Length: 67
Image 1 (cartoon, one colour):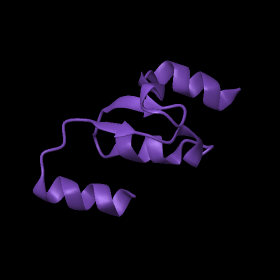
Image 2: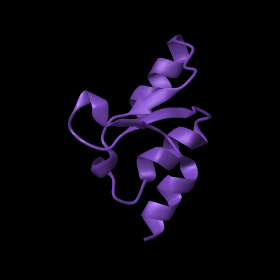
Image 3: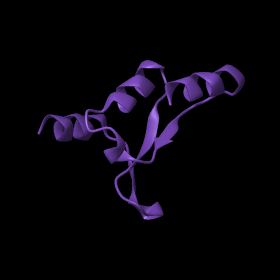
């Protein structure tokens, strides 16, 4: 995923992103990698449906990760 992001950043201006699968990485590595690349996360998928997108809240994410 990070190689894809770096490749896209090389040819397109990326102002933010949507991570659609919260459960794909239980330790949050993708989230931290995206943030480290300097790309803000706008929305975060918490389910399987379109309406399961929530505005990304870093504090909420960290609290859930540490529970």
